[in-house]
Amino acid sequence: MSNETATAAVAWKGTVSDDEQSKAPLNVGVALILGVLLWMGPYMGVNGVLLPARVAQLVGDQKATVLALLSTSAMIVAAIANIVFGALSDLTRSRWGRRTPWIVCGAVLSGLTLLLLNVVTSVPVLVAVWCLYQLFLNAVVAPLIAVLADRVAPKNRGMITSFYALGYSVGIYGGQMVAAPFVKNVSGGIVILAIAAMVGGPLAAVLMREKSSLDMPKGEFTWKIFAQHFAFPTKNCRDYYLALVAKFLIVAAKFTVAGVQLYILTDYMKQTADGASGYLKIINLCMMVTAIGMTLIAAPVSDRIGSRKLPVVACAVFVAAGSLVPFFSANPSVMIAFALLVGIGMGMFNAVDQALNVDVLPDPDTAAKDLGIINLANTGGQVVGPVVAASVIAVWGYQGLFPISACFAIVGGILILFIKKVK
Image 1 (cartoon, rainbow, N blue to C red):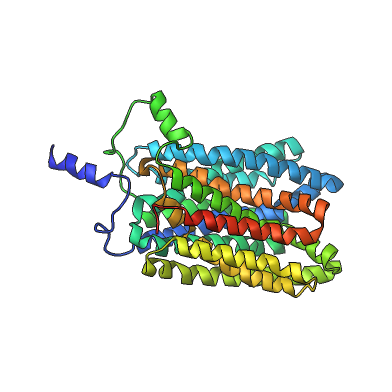
Image 2: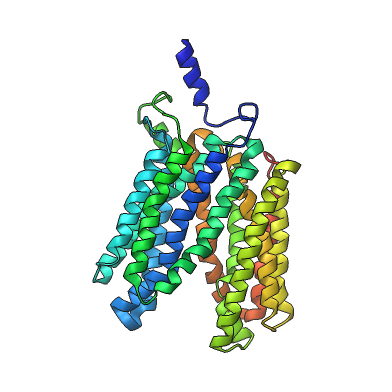
């Protein structure tokens, strides 16, 4: 074997060992902060604020029905696209690497697609454009997560995952804050967020400086290759599926309560619309501050103690405790306690979740595809939580809601304890 071939083989073994990476790759961390922030922020700003406003402009009183149609269609497209684009990036061989072409093209095309929302005039076209946006957006999402597996050694994953989580958390809340002043100028808000989306991918790619993947081993596209790169894992995947189900349950636990918090305030705690609005602002602010703060604290602690499981188990306890607080009192102030406890828990979770996911991957060569699949647990939990809440409220009332949420969180934490590959 020539020296060049040997070097290529070392460079492309699928991940980085602790011995090969003495210091945390801060350029990758900064790229992840900006890359995630600039896809999550525009997405949340449009999805949570500007899209509903645009729908109201188009259909008036039918807006709730149309929004449900948009959400359902987007979820289906996003679920498929996340897996497909993850697999395609795993298989990509280019002078710019495996992830960069998809991150850059996906960002630019997703931004351009957002601009189309300003010119659509019918519901079918609106649904088509929103689905197209989801398609391009997930060309960014899946490859960007896989960078953690490609470029970060296990001992540094807690710290670099916290960079990712910081961009994610700021994007969730910041995107809606940026969009809120544009409710009466939807077109202007969409233009600003579309530009941000287009900038994010190229900026992250420049900061990451991914190496060429042209020397990475290639293979003929056979049924075996298809099954490996486009199907759910079937080998060496016990811990992987434990992490996936645990993630689903913990996220569902949060959204079982948080997804219907407006109704909890108005129907269970008997607040007026104005009173509920005031509490919602405080609740979301508390959750944002605690989540971001704990994200920054938990990641280095996780690296220092050498444990990924402990912060996630602690998260489950905090989420369960926070969910139970409203069970004991219908005073609206207890929702602030809920927000603080759940914010602390989810901050811990966000800090190490992706690092844990990377550590339990069945095959580093299919990292983006497998992380795309496990990310479906996040989407699924957000969707299923409010559905479970509606069913429980209909049968047992609001008093039954909070124990169910707590049970979800505790079971998720217990499943994490059964993972063997990770401490």
